[in-house]
Image (cartoon, one colour):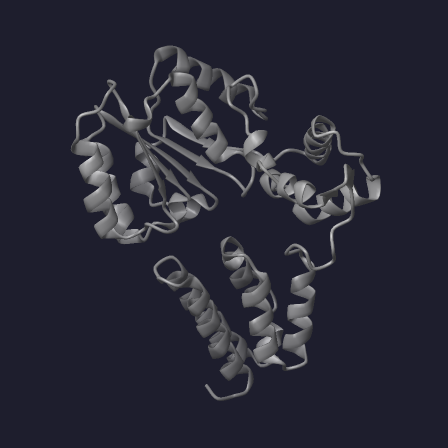
Length: 312
């Protein structure tokens, strides 16, 4: 496997990028013609092409790599990082007229870090533009949203037929024989995350033929069935270990919603369910600020187990 298909088939130009919204396409073409981008905030589900669009835009504008700072905001998400690395980059002289800071997964920034970022957006707006992506726009503070209003866009997911065709096109280009049942299984596991879908067809292409993935080869919705069955069987430790082993970190927030939607797991009594709501709420709040989100989720599950057992 010499090359990742997700990178090989990532759009390199606006003509290669598939827009679901014609109005967005026209607006972006106008910015490219003008030679600069505004502060941008792109939201949407994982794998819908937010990061790809940012990279396409920078490529179309011919921005020198020296003038671009790319940051994984789910990892580098503290106040010190904003004050040190981002502020220092903003203060240095660039090669071109405008520099760009690409904050991928900006919803991973802690609230204090977002507060500092707000001031940075204002201070350097004449020479630095911020390009943010997020999965959960409600986790971005209003002050940042307002400063990105001109460039704020929601990237819609592909419909299922388009999703199928993108995978079929990649398989055709790679001269891989398509097994319809195998392709269906992969789409069921990965839709609407196109990046994940392309990764999975590469992982399941052997000897020039697409084969069905193993049942446990990828995280799928079935883990929720296993999880709820374990909880209802009062096997709390096994359920917690199942979650930590099978759930991707970007899906942790969905687990909190799932726990809230199944309050009866923690007890039929109103008192127990009320306590569970408070614990889930506290866990979700801490999720955006905790250095290790897996520990935070595990601690929340331990507290819920104690409620179910009547310990608290």
